[in-house]
Image (tube, rainbow, N blue to C red; front, top):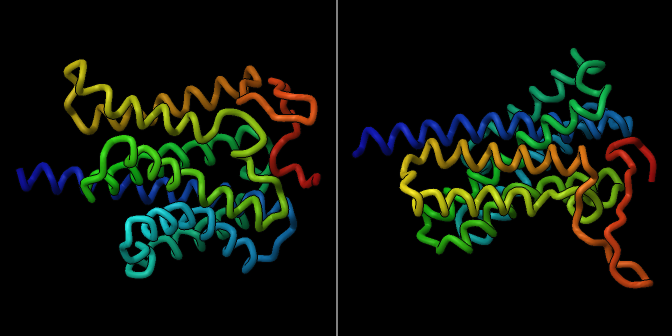
Length: 226
């Protein structure tokens, strides 16, 4: 049992670092579009990677994880270096940003969900904390680069994360007990929903002065336009 627990911890740690790097890349990529300097881009990368987890830990009343673990600072620095060395590949093309951002939010969703489970919270609360972990960093990123947060104005975002969390808890009801399988299934569902939302312009109904409409903006995020 101890060996299995260690394996799960290692598995979640790997997911966490991959998510942190992907999140930092998405943040630094948008900062570079806004022509931030290296320091400013590093700050945006760190905020994107660590912002959601910090808010989650505050809600859980535990010490924010990065205060005793420098890996997120290192990952943010690596993201800036990566953009600096391979900027053209990372910056050009909306698909690149989509891939890194979706990898980040899907992994952070599952990380946040598991941390809530470790603190003995109910599934509904674990899903909410997972969503907070997934999207809060992006909200802070968008505010810092003077954009309306993506979660409030475009394709299915937080709801995609929530769907992945719901699937994680539903799978044991059909006999799927493996934590690995449940995590992978949740990650895959988030990725598929996000991809379909972007391809077919799916979104939550928008409130306007004339009532509720399903129309939403098609402006590309990170284009530098306000």
